[in-house]
Amino acid sequence: MERGSPDTESSGADSEMSGEELVERWVLYMNQNPKSTNTQLFCMLALLKAYAPESYLLMSECQKILGPPDPIHGGPPFEDRMEPFTFFIRKSSPNPGHEHVCMIDQVSAQCAVKVMAAIGIPRSATVTQMMNSLCGAQAEPHVLQFIKDLLTKRKMGQKGKENFSRLVEDIRKHESFNEALCVLKRASTIFKENAAFPQVVSRLYYIAKEPSDYVKAEEWAKRAINRAPDISYIADTLGQVYKRRLLKMGKGTGGIKSMADEAFRAFKDVERKADNEKPLEMDTEGTASIAATFNNQGLFGFLQVAKIAFEKLRDQQHKASLIQNKKMEVEDKFEFFEWYLTYSKPDKTTLATLLLEGCGDLLQTLHNKNSS
Image 1: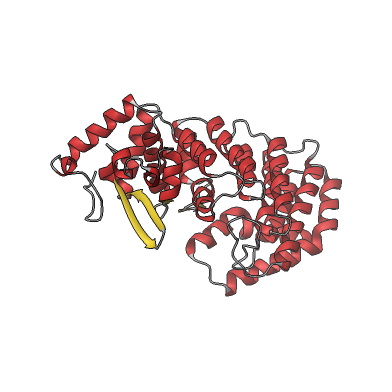
Image 2: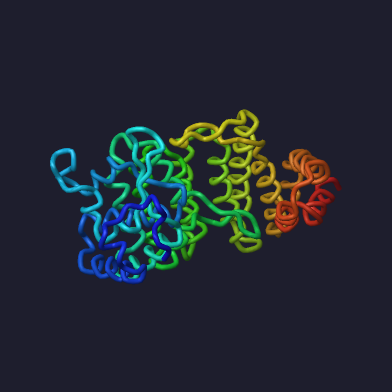
């Protein structure tokens, strides 16, 4: 781990110790005192910095976690209470009266998180405790935003966005699916108006659970829609649940047409909501529109469902019914994506994704079938 920056406050004893000795000291302390309030606060600061580098806690929030006595009532200074972690903590005051507290750097935080997990302080327990401690009836906006980033913010990969946030992925990898599920369900309970958390719960059920639980995924997708009934990106999750369920069904099995109809309705709802959205950013409560650009997932999902259903239906009468009922809509949406690919000049990743998902030659085949 790197040593502290010049604005990091540390005791004279700390300044005489090497970085390795300082680390050994807090690892030993954490191992012996895993439930002490200063260990708990250090774990929260480490988790925040490791997964949301711009995050911080206010000094007042740190004092709340540490508990009495507060320095203003004669208690010991913050630095003394945070020993032996003080050397790895930075304080700053960007706004008068709002002192920010965080880890000194992301590398130190990532190392600390690994140590925490190794000695029996899992990521899931730390983020849950942070929500329980700081997110009562009126959570501070910055705390909500940081927790939302921890649990819902996905990075871009080679094939588009990752399935889940890095923290959720690490909880799944190093702990279990159930621990990730419990954390997100707890977040959904605490932040009762936020649609992002039930949306991720839904995605966990149909992407990460083995085998997928489409009933639960549908239930949680609808909960998210109830919280944000006008946001197309939230509505899209329900369509994805139906589409994934349709994709997993065997060819010629019963229920393909009815499942396709559910998916068609869901994606048409996404399209309708996208048409009504204005380019606003989602607020920290997850209740405002997030359409910075037009959301075309409803159109794209509709075409994918048409393609999947056409390939899976073996009964020729059902195939003919699908073509007859969806011909005009499929043609209109196909023409939109022809225009999109021609004039919007998407980057290579986006174009490759569209082609791989069936918006290229395979979709042209469906278009020709529908036009015949």
